[in-house]
View: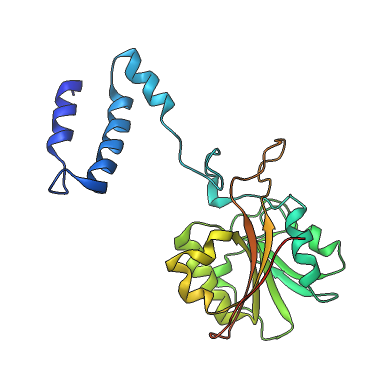
Length: 230
């Protein structure tokens, strides 16, 4: 299809009525990205290369498959450690390559099971956390750095609330302030500040966002206690 015809057809296909406000701006952005990929001129091809890739856990990085971001920064476990009873028995349900399990186990805690939908090492078994039957033992907990894609995270939190007494999740600090998190914040009894983390090995740069540990329980009338850094 000639580029001029493609361009005209795309502009005539605007589906949202009035060409104003946020829908129109989003349409223009998407239209520009699409046309840049098909523009036969050198300038168009260059602009296509400059279009930003899909965002991952931090805006400067491309999103990884299955939201796989290993918890290799020791600051995450260092912040959580004072709040874990001696020899805590835990499950790691989104274990990835097992980095979080190793750090917590090195502190004397006991991992009862470690699994992931797409495991990154032999010691992590392949299993979907949403199929996990959970635990009836009130002394066991889940400790994990889950996927942040909302459609998955929402299901995971719902599942853990039903199937385990308590769950520690490493999440963006903004989770507590989002309206869509409100139903889950009623189950949150502790928020432990971690601060910025390094998600990419081999880089000097830490995240642009702050992270916290959230402790969720089955109780739905929780008033969370916040524990700052230091």
